[in-house]
Image (cartoon, rainbow, N blue to C red; front, side):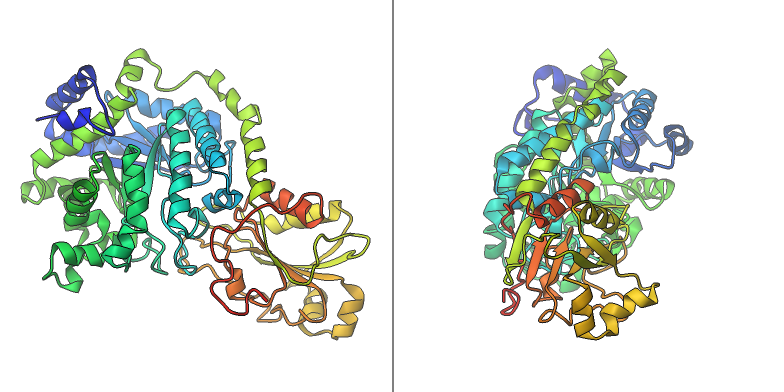
Length: 573
């Protein structure tokens, strides 16, 4: 094989590194080569040994694992066990949109990308990428499936939302460049997603193959601009999603039928002609999770598994069933859907990226996983200070047409708080932030009554009491929203508690305000709320900072990176 492409951007390998790639490929059996195409999720409730036993039983040696949800010492031990099991060093990946905390429970949650975008300071994005990389390096992780470079064009899209830097392509590129550089400088490989671009459709590719419906010109001036900028900077990897781009599919195949248009993860033209051809991307392509509904909406899984690699992806992410998907890949080779030449090309990029960050040298030296002393990074507080700064600069006062803020316990003593949502979600499995919010308000000297549907007396006050009686008892009605998709919802919208009894019906009688610590678009459902705040991230430090700002201890500094008024003529009134 001609390895010239490994000497070019983004690999820049030297002869010694290329020799390792070549020697490794030549030493592998076909079965081992095929196994290296897979990267699996290693669940937090499964030990390394349990997962490895399953893989050994079917003779599959993957290229890596994605880990979630354990404290740093446990994660480090699991990574060490995984790395020690294989001769070829592993990618150890995380899905870390807002910091290392999604993998490492005592790691930093710096804030969703939209919160960072609201600060207006790209250097905070750089620092976020850097601290994420430092914490990942301390446990032996080396690859992050981020940043998200989707553009939040559609406020009803339930999956991009606060994961995006915003709706302005130039700002998305500006912040994405800096957070990726921070990761890179800390030794963590960034991976931009979700090719060919989420945020136009209002549906979720977890459930179906969604559509980026922009024209070629519109796409070139938005998503294309962002992807091209990241490619020009030398981005190492791209995650290809289950999203259709009909304008370019029809351009490359004028006679294609609508029902035959494939999502990015399976699309030869979007991979080879657009991404690698027109845009010049030479790095590694990984599919998005193949357990998603969008992956098999158009073709059967038995075909989709080998087709994904044959049509341009280098790594197959996750599985529905490890043994079955492994067999589907091997059957695809037997049937001629996938050639071993294409497998070798994918392997060259997989091993080339491993060589770029010297995983083979670290394997030889026994330094793939640092000593336990490296875990001291989690005790230094550097990440928390950064998260606090991002919260302080990002939380946004969208409107206060009644000049209500700040609240003063000597003036607005009695608050009636209505939690909305606040359940565990897809990107935050905890929920229950209203309790902390109320606790912090009480610490500031406010009397707080919390709506509880089970408490008939308290619930009746907002739902059917006399307005004049309510006014005598409460100074402010405060809606606390923590609404995000929970993994099976197709929308992130307000569901009013109490069978509509909590709908804002006294905004002209009692000062009323709303805060959101996730979805920034709740004015869609409550456009006349006169005071509205977006905090973007459901984390303790964000809630604490939010209460400080409500109480006037800190000014609001954030600027919304999206149209929080959702284009409505009455939402800014």
